[in-house]
Length: 107
Image 1 (cartoon, one colour):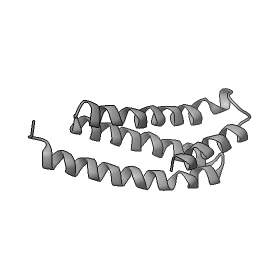
Image 2 (cartoon, one colour):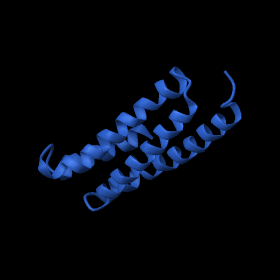
Image 3 (cartoon, helix red, strand yellow):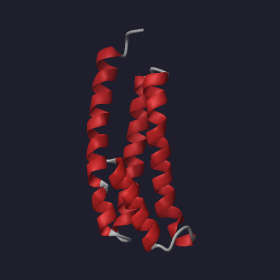
């Protein structure tokens, strides 16, 4: 999954001619979802904040969806390569939710 979305970002970067005014939004959205993705592990596992982990995953999913939508008109292959990642985020969100609900009141 990570190889897919990394390659996707390269396709968009290449299509837009690198880092410039045209690439600020599409690559900025990518950077934002990447930062949110990285934040989930220390929130969920490190701090044991399952509810906040779910919020982080939902924000990641929203940012990844916005990234995919912004990439669609730039490079359709890049956008399609994001679909498995979006599916994984949906599954991870469902798993995070059920874990939170099943264990939320335990210390």
